[in-house]
Image 1 (cartoon, rainbow, N blue to C red):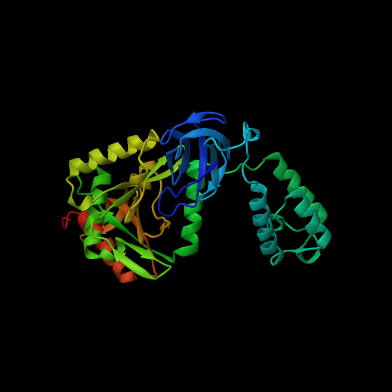
Image 2: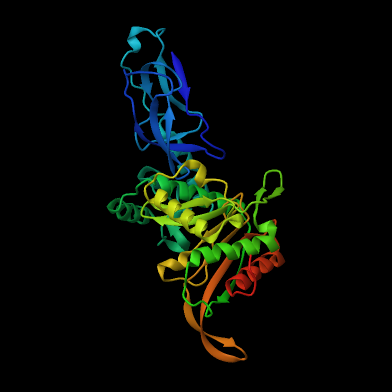
Length: 370
């Protein structure tokens, strides 16, 4: 009997979600034959079989989340006993993990809420996190009725686990919240001189190239474990693309050396591949800085964006609108483009960020060229 543990499918991955199996227990397979499709880091990956033989067991079903290194499948290479035939081994009980997390939540809650032991026991029985319950008892005490009321409301709208892209996004945001020390600055670019809006995204990319050239520390990766900073020569720009499934960040390589027409073609290809869920995993990794052009939705001015480690910075662009501004010493109505820059203050200073944003604005206003 040979055991196949889920391999590391890429740097930084901790788990995958099973999408579907391409084989069943009892099937005879050959090495490199497609075994299972999994989703991780916002991409669907096909995992091939490492062995030839009969499939003796599959561990997990579609929708299950499997940690890297956990048993995924077993193969009978001829040495297994006949009583093993047809045995289907289920996933490792997810309840163990949930129980651990529930216990952690209870311990955290216990330090913040007031409740009698019997009420805490009732909350555990009903699966209620006490920190979410509004107390009605004296001096902020949570009563049994409070717990029952909350449980009845929650039962009407059952919780559903996050899957796929939403789950990956939640993990990334949690990691960012735990690691990054964010700071943000905001300003506006006067774009009244643009004859028309033109290709706004390409203009923004050009402006970010200008910013990276004057403040290269923002085009970098920071390793918080050993406190090392790697300033990257090429600008591999992450482009935030919103879909019905969630947010994807695809990567455009070496944008500083590409022509405008090539950038537009690249943007179109990335968007098409993301919408079709056909983008290769390699094109979702390795961004050195990110752009979020949320202004395309017609709303939004300022934003406090989330920097995803190991990156150091992210730029947000709001909606172009006419605003009353000072122009040539007098009030005037001018079209302006609001910009937001969030950066990791552990490695970049306010001066670094200010120089970056000024270079972006100068580029967008036609005062300089990248």
